Amino acid sequence: MGVGRALLFGSLAAIPGMILAVIGWAISGAQDDWSDKNWIFCYLPFFGCIAAGFFAGLRSEGVGYEEG
Image (cartoon, rainbow, N blue to C red):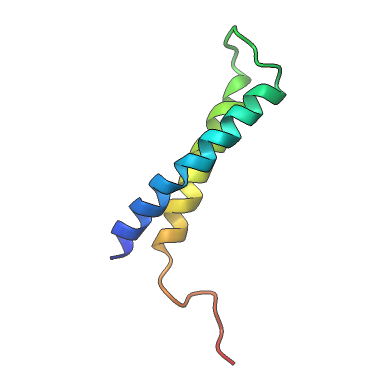
């Protein structure tokens, strides 16, 4: 269940990743010519959100929650 949930969370996290990538592209000046620094504004938010969603899905249930 952990890997399936991780894949689901990762794929769902692509939606806010796309939105953040477009916002980053617009903030950077919406350049038509591609340069090496554009990967910071476009690829990093997109794949960062997917990785965060994947790792959040891998966490076992109850990790990080203390009952008291």
